[in-house]
Length: 337
Ligand SMILES: [Zn+2]
Image (tube, rainbow, N blue to C red):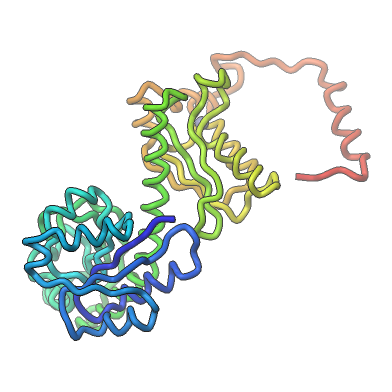
């Protein structure tokens, strides 16, 4: 179970949405809300949601370890800025590298930086007669709105739109995407973490995968090719085998796979056979090639005519080969898949 701390400075619409989203998800939970102002509505919201809320002043944030100590004490895994308007202090950045996530109500790098928050952003976008705006979900660093971008979504702006109209469109995007992207980021980071740990364990290649059902990790797998002498023991295949064991089913529909690298053709096939709903991957085929794992070669081979492939195949005993299918079709009490 991963724990989130939500940092807020105002009304707390995002706090509400994120908390509600994770209420019925078992893998991630909102542990607490941290505010830097008193008498703001988000405090009331936290109370109504039954979530602990803590107030810290400027001195606590920048000249003490009080906030960091609270995070450690409560075992916080990720910090989410949900309308938090101060720069995150260095001690938190150091301890939560790529684990502090913010949302900005425009398409960064445009309309970001100091003073660009809330209605100021929408007014600037409308004044510039932009045809589109959107949201940017990004990691937080020592400067305003300049950390690595995780995700963007766009909305169109009509010539007659006011800053208030734009604010409404942005709120819809925030509600639609922010909680889901937080979840996706955390799960994919878990898969990448498995890949890195697998290198140290010397069990196989730098690959990790997890399988999620209804917001909960039900199985994981890492590459164990070299330690088990099994060339098919890729992270995704191992994760699929573990998930099927866990669910006691050969069909994983309703599940999603998060994998540290784009699946190779074998794993992609296994994912299709397992009927998984969706694939999220971090590194691409080119990155795998960079590490000496040339999946691209097999993808190219598949696209070739059979006679042009490196491994030759030929058909033989065609007539007899049909017999098992005749028998299968004539069998009444079989388990179809
Ligand atoms: Zn594979």
